[in-house]
Length: 328
View 1: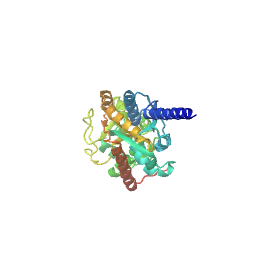
View 2 (view 1 turned 45 degrees about the vertical axis):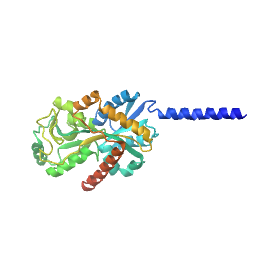
View 3 (view 1 turned 90 degrees about the vertical axis):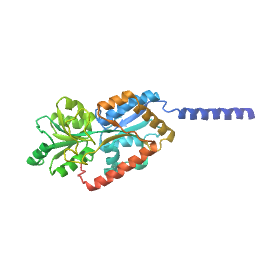
View 4 (view 1 turned 120 degrees about the vertical axis):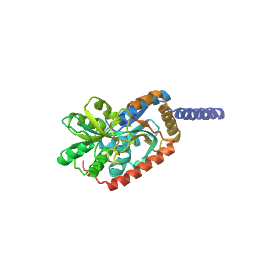
């Protein structure tokens, strides 16, 4: 009887040990990356480029799931309420993961700051103050201002939704320029904004370089200025917002990998190390260089957490100073 008991206990110990080993091996199945916009925008592009390299580094598929709508809340909540095991992540940005948690805190069914953790900041996209070439002839920023003053409220600008950073950026620009324009929000993100501009439903927007580059080359869109510290490669004639007379206007469009806050630290560390290694791969660098994107990887998971808190604090200040109409 004692021998049987010992055998059973030994078997139980082996089972427990085997389970621990299995749990320690991460990832052992495909990982889902939730993206808060439709395919084609900068956030989606970032998720797919990093996903390809993470697959190579960790040996599992990183599958992108696009979940647009509700200012990014749907995507954030799906990720935050998933099992905290590293198999459901999110690639988010300044709009969905810094502004939305501040402006629309009461719409969440979770506590963003308690339930979400930033694994790593990934990169920064420059944005263009851009206009359509569809029935809209504007030469530069001054010309845009002149036309807007001549036709108050008639020029339409698009954004990635009410309360998104392109919405704030355009409102701040309009106030500094002393002009009035009509806001046409598009909840599907950069891809929807791009369509609004190309077909002429909207005339102007702040749109990231990755989403707009192809249509600029095709002659459908025209960049008037760039949100960057200096002029960007490939567009030597496009001035910075500061050079155009609007220093401090415009948001550097960052992307971040996020996970449920209760995700075990070893899993977070594995993901962070994989992100760092992915960022060193020539294929990833080449892909982002084509989009004019600068890699900006966090120094550590702890620094990523501190950085995201700083972003939330910064946008609390901005949103308290720049009041916008939040009705849908």
